[in-house]
Length: 285
Image (cartoon, rainbow, N blue to C red; front, side, top):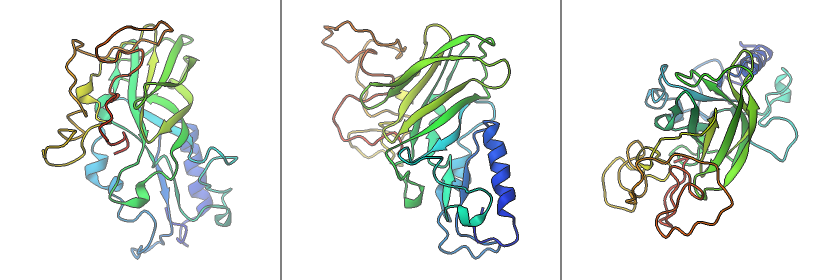
């Protein structure tokens, strides 16, 4: 939407977005300096590749997704940032986005009867600088939408974990209660440019995505040139450490000290984390 559009009422736009946000649909809203005509030269998000069909068609109607809402990209400032205002254009930021800096890798969705999981991140790599998240971390509520198999019973208590993909540290964990109606919601999820793995579990977590489909440390090149990371971020992870695990089932960490001399286990490195210091790109690439 355009802040310089005299033919559209700004208050109506703000009201519509706020209603969508309150429904936890996971809408992405962009606004900038464009007007009602096609003369949008210099508008902040014009030419963003995130609005191209090639980007938008990554998503499918028959696959679950994390619907971000109530997002805030400036955790140091009171209220939600950026500012849409109270319906008066003078109270709004000249440009901004709610949800536009938040993303996930569709191929990393796990959607079983007992576990839902996704790799989520702030956009940190783009040929279009205005697509890059302006902060290292941000926060949003996350609703599980279009779940195909994850349908916990109302009033059930679920465990959730938010695990940093670079360090394996648990950023957040807790419990939520399934509402009587509406989607399962985890409030206040922290997103970073390194990326993290969000898991919601009804009982034991069974996150069976393995390293070869979690692309957060993968090469984003279109070619197969030799470097530390082979393949593109749809197919290969940064390293193919050979171990005996066929998957990376997640188990909450315990306090016992492992004496394992082999590859890092799930107590320290979550599915998809790259424990090699090979200069791999962050998840948002």
